Image (cartoon, rainbow, N blue to C red; front, side, top):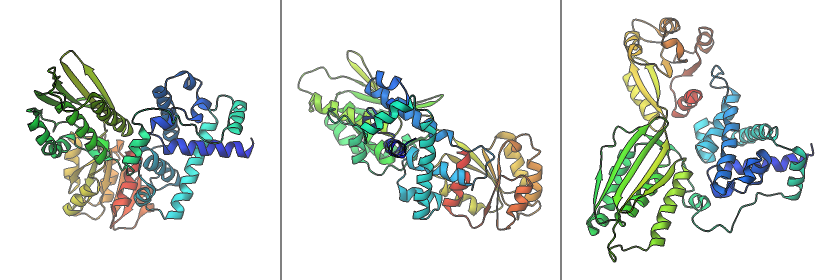
Length: 413
């Protein structure tokens, strides 16, 4: 295969991954028509969704098998792709998460993108047509004539897109004092039903604040009655609904329809950029705006260690991720914990009173619940080979940095 063709194809793959959540950029991307015939027959939004799904599937297909050592090269490449393109971390943030030098990071990034490009090239529908298309067109095509607020504008407004777990109840609690003067002016009551049972959603805090502010402002300036905010959790998704009656008397609204429409359009674009969806339901005298996010999968880390201070430190280390820590100070408490829960990962110390970690490790491998979870040894005792020979899935040497802990848990996130 001609090298210039593959090089251009690889550049297109890199470009598409870098704009993974920019629908405006993806909807006319030449990569899409090469990978699926349905791309050209779909509308702009469907085209962007099709190409995004193909890219996500390609990255996910590189995820190593569960028994692959956490510190392996394969896991490092996959974690790099996940941090850079799925979680939208910038290179500096990803370097810190992976504990890589700048030169090593960019070497690994080039190799990871090469693997994605090679995988996608095998799915090109007709290589001959791809050659002709690439030879005649050397850069992605973007429809610059589109009118309205696009994802490119969103990315310019929010260049830093670090994602973390966010509690919607806390976010709304922070925002209510900001919109209260506007609500007072419109004689509108904002009623928030309890949201503290909602699971957290994954996204960028600044971007989600703007979404909620835009929707609240839209609702308040559209009614002179009451805005009711409710949350709901269903299998696969978390929802936040804003219900309000529409003001029908002339002259009461202080904002024009185009301004209102632009505000809601921006909110919808930002929601899509963080992996969610905004939808509207309008009746004659009422409107409901619904925000939907994919459900987060909470992970449980059973930490067996007699040092309670270390457990608190690890809780702070993991506060922005999907992990919750269940702490057991010895083997007895660990057995009690296993009676009521199934951990995603077990983190086990060696030097503990009464029973040491080696005894507990052997017992856990026979336990009907514990043996389903990978066990990571976390100790000042430097015996990684012994730990591996006894069935441990990995080894962490104390003291442990946040980056090392996150990297060790990444395979099971």
